[in-house]
Image (cartoon, rainbow, N blue to C red):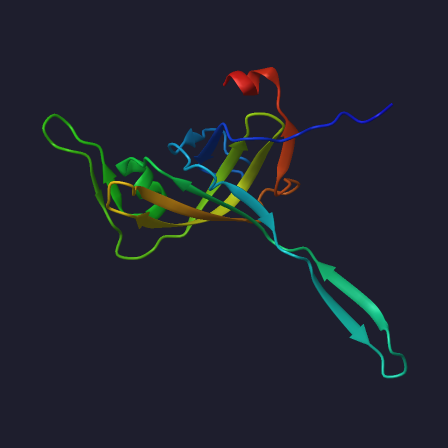
Length: 178
């Protein structure tokens, strides 16, 4: 029997939340905002190979490979002050009454580690229990420009024993409707 063909296309949402207390995949994840068109990417770096040679032969006697790291990149185009604080650090204070929402930048760039779920329009949904997120502001203040929060994520080894660093699951009808 032929294997079912799966095509992973588009982006439905990116959800981010706290890593579970046991070091596994977080259970409470929130959408950060709209993802700017064509910015969500997943790439794996080339594996690193170390060859060990003997004086007596020309070819390697042993060759050891280490997998390249996996990176995700995306840009948020409508961040709230809370999202700014979550990604860039500092303090995000929602407004009340006549007081507007406010974000105050941190004095030092924080280390941000979160659980992340990438849900496409169809195909494979990706869950990453532990990802380091480094974010920066990229804004063009013009009629054709927009403020973006550019996020660079590096997949890290989960701290929970037996948990895989990435899980790709074929989407169900419930995923499509969510």
